[in-house]
Length: 208
Image 1 (cartoon, rainbow, N blue to C red):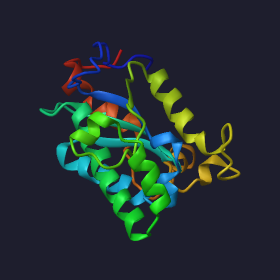
Image 2: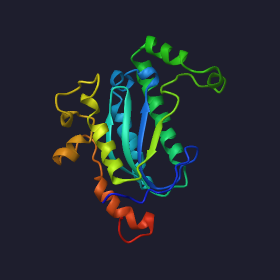
Image 3: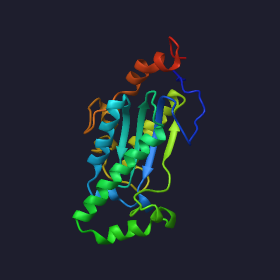
């Protein structure tokens, strides 16, 4: 099982093709906004919003200042870019609301100062994220596995020492893939998603 059905080119302007995508978005200036506002639940709420559209969360890790997710997207009329952008926007609104309720004027000023002049003219008040998000189409099973391993070990890699064992990190699907126990958010196993969607998306009877 080395290759999936992901053979189409990725147009980063308007992505509509179904498949498994690795997604990353990061807080402005790498500020730990998810930790500061305890906004992990806001990401889970966005995950929930994907389900009625038929999409599936296959893996994730929510770090203090960024999110990695592996999502299985089915055919959609909205571009995948738009779906992710809408999710980020709703998360941002609630993060700002929590900062305001906490009277965190210092952080709010940093986020306000980060808004570009052109965005200010359009009425934007706060900059919550780095300018763009990363989205990669997973063309092979090997690539899927690499991304799962990468995101799951994030809490103990480089400067991060959030836990002693990466499978113990609360806001992650690592425990499910490594030990068979679902975490805070229940995900669909990559293999199950591939089995269910292979014929529908690829038009083939078996996976190469």
